[in-house]
Amino acid sequence: MSTPSSAESPHSTVGQPSPWVARFAPLVRAGGPVLDLACGSGRHLRLFHARNHPVVGLDRDLRGVAGLSGTPGVDLVEADLENGGPVPLLRDRRFAGIVVTNYLHRPLFPALLDALEPGGVLLYETFALGNARFGRPASPAFLLRNGELLDIARGRLQVVAYEHGEAAAPKAAVVQRLCAVNDLEAGSGLDGDPEPRPLPPPLPA
Image 1 (tube, rainbow, N blue to C red):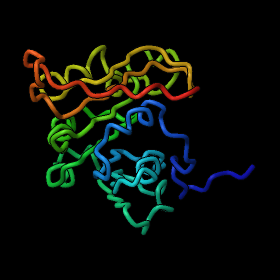
Image 2 (cartoon, helix red, strand yellow):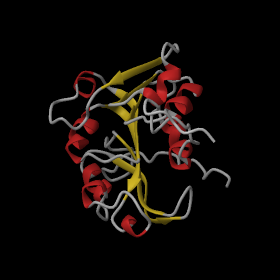
Image 3 (cartoon, one colour):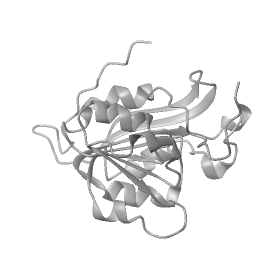
Image 4 (spheres, helix red, strand yellow):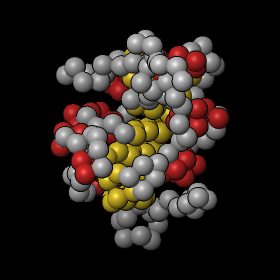
């Protein structure tokens, strides 16, 4: 077995899309632009590109998606998300879908919500407190507290689905997951509540 070179990205192996993201991907407006924040190896860029969405991959290290460079409909943006400055992409563009997996930088939450177009879908999945018993990440700085994704959506987004707990696959971990839509407009006959979105069935195991 060869040893990866120092120039090889830690995200060079492309994994399967998250079942959570894949399940709720159909809720994203057909043909609407999708942002994969901290895109890593680009597994979700590939998922949404295959669904005929123009996609944007944003990361501080784009070596994991170098093979997608020049692909029509794929925009790769290199940026440090944690240097304390604004991220121009989030300030200047609006997306039909924003995907964040295995990444947490709390100061970005307001910009992420602002970057959703009306009806845009936020798909978020990352580790939560308690994950230290299974390995990394173990620092509370990188672990969501109970209900934290619900808190950021409250008053801004319609929550379609939420999970928090221990997961066995793809590895043992404590995770928190959210699917939420930028739409709180009152639906007909719903006493001020928004029109519910359809719940796609869980993917087969």
